[in-house]
Image (cartoon, rainbow, N blue to C red; front, top):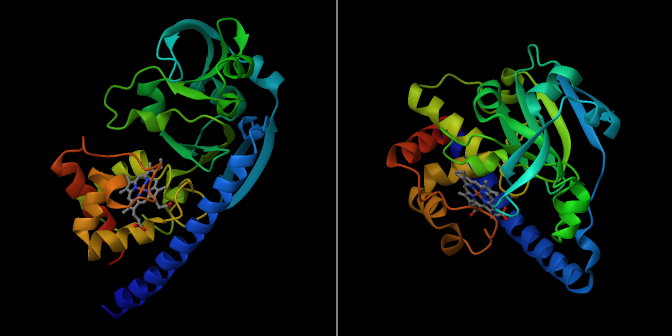
Length: 287
Ligand code: HEC
């Protein structure tokens, strides 16, 4: 209990600091945005491939030529940005990995975006959802097409999925503004936050966390989790343990529960079992 108390004090401190920091960041962003219309330009055109071996990251750049030399397909696909089916030239992620970085023991793929968002792909999801890179839309290179619909910041690299079936939150498998692909052994990606023994409900909760929360809430191990939110897993766990009503409120109606959470999606579509499993997992991380 003493450990928990210490953690609670640290977390409250972190929480207060995070509140002040995010208020300052929000104000600065608001000032910047009000005077700058050029912020929509793509932030980076390079795509980095990182392999994590024994905790060490080895990175290299994937060139445009490498991507265009991959096996392509042209299909009528509906695109998140416009909702209608359009002729789209794609490269399946599986084919890209086979050529660029055979998966081997590194069975988890993390995709990092320029806005600190991360999508997480297990081998099963790569098989079933069939994620693909978008190269061209209606014969136009993706960046040109995105500029024509006034969203250059979504480029230059986007992944979409062909089959959302079986995914509770398929939108978390559509990262845009991609800057880095990370291949890592799942076990290494879970190190330090989800490597403890846990029962089946918590195990299911961990999978929910990976698919639906880790895109924005990082885990503190420097590998897994996006940093769109300033609140790490540890803090979410503290809320789940100490203020379940607030935690449940955040899942159901985030903007009403915490006006700072403008970018946090609602999980009102989750079943009570999903919510319980997630809470069970989060609780297991603070024991
Ligand atoms: C698209 C990004 C995104 C996703 C995905 C997301 N969140 Fe959040 N979450 C946020 C942001 C942004 C905040 C507001 C605080 C901040 O600015 O960091 C927040 C805040 C929270 C808070 C309140 C923290 C506090 O300090 O009051 C909880 C609890 C929380 N999220 C839980 C979750 C859980 C559980 C999931 C998955 C089911 C999830 N979030 C998924 C972005 C996200």
